[in-house]
Image 1 (cartoon, rainbow over the protein chains, first blue to last red):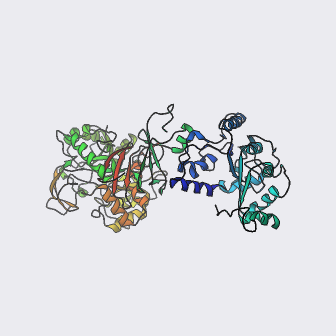
Image 2: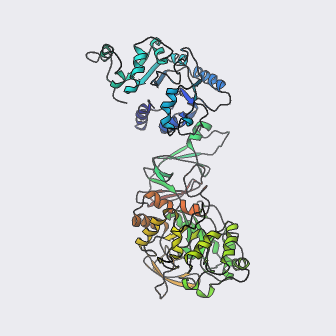
Image 3: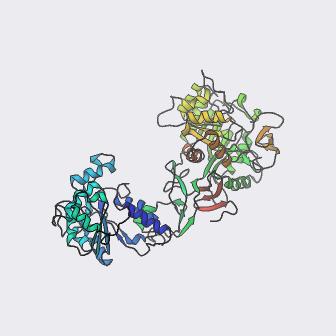
Length: 227
Length: 409
């Protein structure tokens, strides 16, 4: 739910007539396995209700992994193929988990991984419980996800990190080394990555780091309004 | 771009910028229609990769399911209890005129009449879908003749009957045919009624209690045999008494079989029922409220004298009486007037007022899977209304069949 604010803004620009999605292609990064597509907590539902139904995107251009496909690996392989056929990803936008995962590349995921089936970490399942009436038995335990390698292929990567509960993950992502236990750290090796943060997300960083990126006159980084 | 040709070629309409009644609330959602039914746009997007062919801007108005009138005796000079040569064109005329009142389905109602009248009229009532020609006909509502003489109201006493030995056969012989009959109003205290109620219920015909002096136990027994409706609550029945609430007591009875609901018709024209009584009924049993017009031939016409079956009635403003008496006889209110009056008198929500004229009658007749809601898969019979619930446009099967002039869309 991190990009929700962004979607709202994009919808606003569209409704004002300033933006059209007629030629935009999207690829969602993940979807739960075994959850009915029209379940209110599926990413299909999320994308339809919070984004697609408000804009003029061509349904043929909106791609989301099918967590109920008969052969899940084939589904993942097809997804990679479709990304390639579309000319590759121009911009990847996503948030991170408190455990530093990008998409559902949970701690321990290969940093060269591609789209595949993943078992969700307990941290993730616990974090999701609130969307399933707090009933752990109802929370999906597996998901299809793009790999770290898949995201690294994008020409530009934008990671959104907001809130104090993500602060430690941000510290691990940029002030420590590249490590498969904090998969978002892989983007230290991507040529064009932006990490968009609010003040609270920087709480675990060194003062020196934060000052550097804020800049004495803000000339390194422009202050971005709260999403 | 249009629908996926492998699923359907039919054009898709998207009604935008509206508040639609769904899930008992007004929601800011678009209404999608294809082939006369309400379409699920999410399924269209993901399964068919389809999108709308035409978008219509509703300018912020309310979209609600079309009203269903289960008790209407005529209107615009037409009397459904009068057997004429061109009876069918009378149904057509009323069906067409009530579109402007927001009614998309109705049950032409016959008051107590001699058997010959039923034999002539009932075969001429065709159950049929609505459209540009008029509101859909769900079937006839035969109110009488097996009712109580004491509570005849405007019904002609000489035609009122009790059951012969073989009650159900007697009923069949009286009406001639039950093919197009949807609702029967009878008085449950009449001997033989239990058997009749069971037989009618078995045939999927809705049994309603009315024009009766039944006490509460007789009414409860009738419900146990299958009765599910009360005809114009309070009118033509014993008044509520705290030691025997009579038929009115069904609203809070604990003897209703599990899983069943008793509905009650209410003429909320401000005349047949005092607003305080309307509020008492609504508060006691809000989910059972069904708004009806009980409109007569004079509805839509100027004040003066008109016929109602075998009687002559006099219209003066919103009041209609048996000529020369103070006995109320039907109404000249329109359905949208009833909805607005109900809203104002009870202070209920807009959603509640709209459901009393759409969802509840559909539930009563067991057709809520296709009428009375804006759920996906339902028939696209709906209304465009302004905030004070004046009908701006009427749609049947997704087609606009009436609109207020100078609508501008």
